[in-house]
Image (cartoon, rainbow, N blue to C red; front, side, top):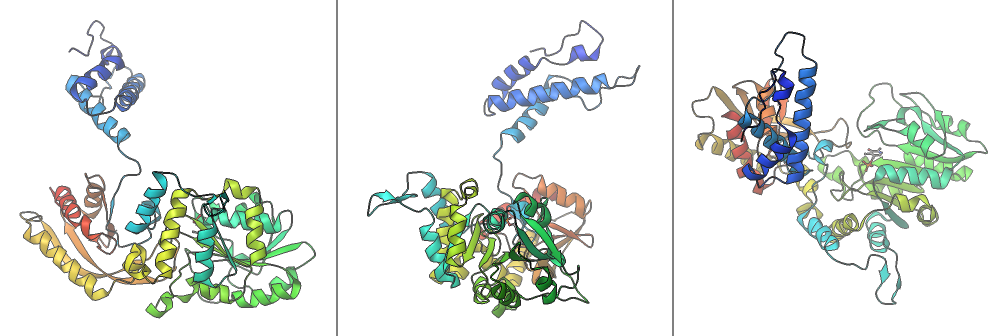
Length: 474
Ligand SMILES: *Cc1c(COP(=O)(O)O)cnc(C)c1O
């Protein structure tokens, strides 16, 4: 097939026709969906035309434009494969960061993923009471499990923790004032900022204290006839050190009780096992927060809990019931797949299986000795497998420190082990090649070396990781 027309010297006239590229793709690459081939051909021809339009007078200006039929087909096929590939696609997390927001935060336990798939692939009793044949409450199962696990009177779940906070603010304080410390007016990321969220939720923010110090009297002085809530927000992704004063949740609860004002905590990342016994900061333990007596505590399902994306609220019966009655609740509700996965995950906690089965817990509680042994064995595999043979690449097994990530435990790092690779074309180049590979691998670059940490790499993924490293080095 001749894709070019050579009647005119204007190079734009030599561009292939989109239609003929699509036909050539259909015969040359029948495995690539036609919609993707069509989109890719249109985009590439349009881009080539723009390049040629913008070329300086007198210059050829065709650099970067495929020349000849084969080059065009290769370009179209490459882009079409990228467009038609699954999104999100699976990647290997070799960063050691267990809750990596850009990598989708918590991986679910296999049991939770199966529960989600079962709920997705058929009909369920989502909103039906099978005994009585009446309409049922979709959250009943999750609410029961949450109260048993946290000691709270009631529980509620919605789409994510951001939604939970919006719902709590709008339900309890719409058109009225919410008091927050200036040290807690945080940005969580993805433009989620407490002051802006409060405005959208229809409440008036009353800031108290200063960035580094807020006293109980600051809250007390701010309370007036329009005060509807005292809100505490966890500084999930940063720390303030030095001359610092915060008001504890318990003190805030006492103040709220004295004035009949609800106290709400946005905990961000909550756990249902006491990580304090493993040397972790204790503040994330939800039952510990409930014991302080707040009206509501909200936290994410896919941070330290290790479940699906969800916003979980636990607390007193009346405000929890009010959340469900807010018309916004429908707009923020959790879907059946996530609900099934959450139900499974909460069941694992109730039955004492969480530390053995929830990936996030397994990964953060990993014993340093086991991690070192696995890392050394993998380093051995790399060397024995000849992955670095004849290459100017140094490999070393090192001690490392990694954050937990995902807006959890700021300032806290886990002792870890990593394989450090140095040399070749440099750590950044190697990291980019690993990312772009057939089984994309995410690793960390630090102090000029590429760090591969197996903490968050599933056993079943190690052969693909090895192949990825081989590809990136060759
Ligand atoms: C992460 C976080 C949120 C947002 O939670 P999502 O589940 O991502 O919506 C809100 N508040 C705090 C304090 C957080 O750490």
